[in-house]
Image (cartoon, rainbow, N blue to C red; front, side, top):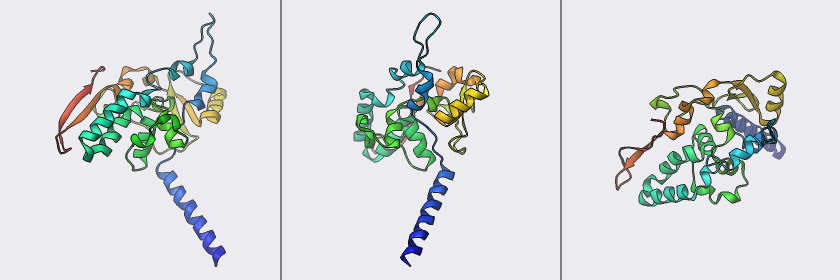
Length: 231
């Protein structure tokens, strides 16, 4: 009897995991999966053109580590405690996009405070949160509604159905079959040509931020154009 119960529990566990995977596959990998090939790049003139190194020191890579941003979220949550969860989910969209987008795909809200301090991140979710605006975020954004209000405030389009190993990432160039295979084996993504990756409209998805204005009770009473460099 115990053996039958153990087998039944195992089957139920596998079935549950399969259902979760089918509904929300793992959407991202951290940048270390990309740097093996996108670092150590030297131009003919001897200049280091390593993409990974340049990104790692950027504001994008450190978006979730920004102490000013962390303090701003904490203050907003203290002022509007009833809306703290919504505030974290909304503000994590551009500063912790891998964690937030994955959480939303799984039917959860993105969280900020639970992942701080980021220096102690060890779980896959924590590492995604700490990696900021990473490679597999921007390079998965589709050309859907780019430049339109529907795409602003991190409402970019992205495939949330295709499983790991077959998901596409976009770049400005055609990639030959050999390099496609190499990239797929390392990053679990298939490179595809998408010239929209070079457009300002793609950047505008996170760099046009319209936030909700809250009253003293945490209720939405309007909208605020917080960041609008694209417009």
